[in-house]
Length: 377
Image (cartoon, rainbow, N blue to C red; front, side, top):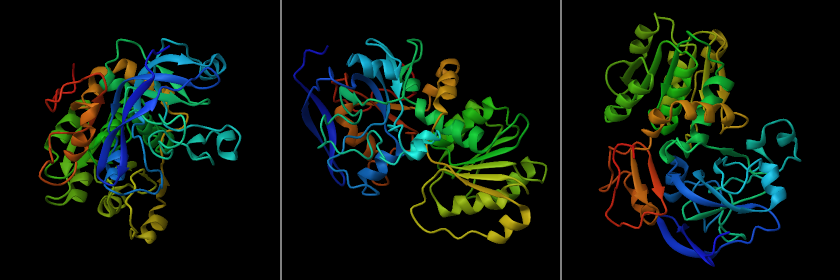
């Protein structure tokens, strides 16, 4: 059991402002568990909410839902329910099921009617306050789905369990990709790269990753993670290029992780007849699509939220390909510099195009800025 009376976390208190706040270390003898955070990665959702793009009224908010850490305390019944023990290194899923509503009962707990998601929908003003991983400790509520991680897996990979889980959901569960199927992923951010890893695991061929002209480092990493081809959408004719790479037919599956109307439209343009377009990226605005093409070519247009019953397969992939997956987290900052990590991923003077995905370590006390640049220890 931790001896500290208080713990410190970085909290979003208003748009564009994170500040350090102290909270009491919760007593979890009655229910739940306490996680000592090893690493938290900075999701695009965090960056959007920091910038004021939010569907939730949850301020003050403790970010952090891509987390790995060690169970240091917990109620025995809650631990048994999670199938973990004190001392286990775990990756908790973001969504907290109630297991009573219709969605949870049908396996769709990511759409639980209680709408509880670590680091996103639960305010830090709600006891026991530690609802996210931007700090040293994080509270795990009963019903949390936690997955054990071996010590061999670097934290840079282990904290991406739910991200790879998203890839499994979009590529395999929603896209139903089989070996030899052509796949195009539009958007080479962390979610797109996770989708590339999963599509490579599923045997996709060809596997094409598309980005924009300033995504050179992301596209290069995508090739190293399994993409057979890459291309840029703001140069030449990307639809013609995709057609060339897929024998003129187009891919059977397109996963659009880029949050833009143009990316959605491109996905519908290049997909093969009878193909599937999976849309996990939130555009945030109305998007015009050519519905006649959907009808004529019998295209399936499928929405895809986060992982549900897909993280188990993701953790297996991580255990086998942790060196590859760790490279998605290209930069690691001390958690006290969480605001810097976010600002460097936003347009402006501080923007750093070298960052593909940033992560935070609570135990690093240095204030020297970025401490890791290649995603490896």
